[in-house]
Image (cartoon, rainbow, N blue to C red; front, side):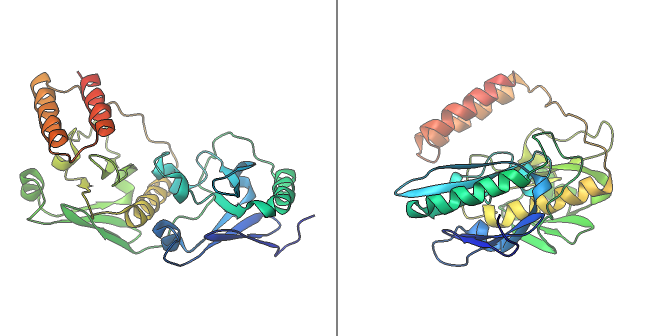
Length: 287
């Protein structure tokens, strides 16, 4: 049996096994993903793990992965499947010659798991600690544990945001957070408000409850822990799950303008073929 305090060291991280949890300590170094460095360490209760896999990796490695239980980790909820494989905090990459040892620990973990794949009723993994802040393209976002504040930059904020003034939202007024990675087209962080019928503009750059990302602004290692901390605070403020939201139907003329602008970005080489096709299909689906 794995003993309390046993450590399995891999590339960029080490897993320390306890009787009811795994402490993941991330390395700090030039080659370590910035997200891991920002997280530092995370304690994952076994109740937050739905399964364990061991698979072949790239270039002579094996990958030990703990499958997070849905709804147990605010970081993974906020990421919503957008993290690149190399930035997955639940993966431990090891040299292939340590496969037998990794298989041993994988079997030990499996034998101790009691949770299945059903969603957790509450967050079991602690969110990143605050206060947190980062600079987006159109403003600075700050979170002190009780409220989220947006301070607009006159060089980037839309006229709608500038006219609305700087914003502060108590977490008790929020039902959740929508995070779209800065690494994709139209990345943003949007606060979802709790008030019934609260209307929010379809476009994040027009919504005073959101900040938009751009090249070099709001990188993953800053904006994702921020989103996770706000999401955990919002859920803690009200255990009731947020109501499902439906995007409002868009004006066909507005859709045409957006596609035309997207085409210009594509022709200028600022948007890849894949991003152009995906976003065009997304816009057409809103008709």
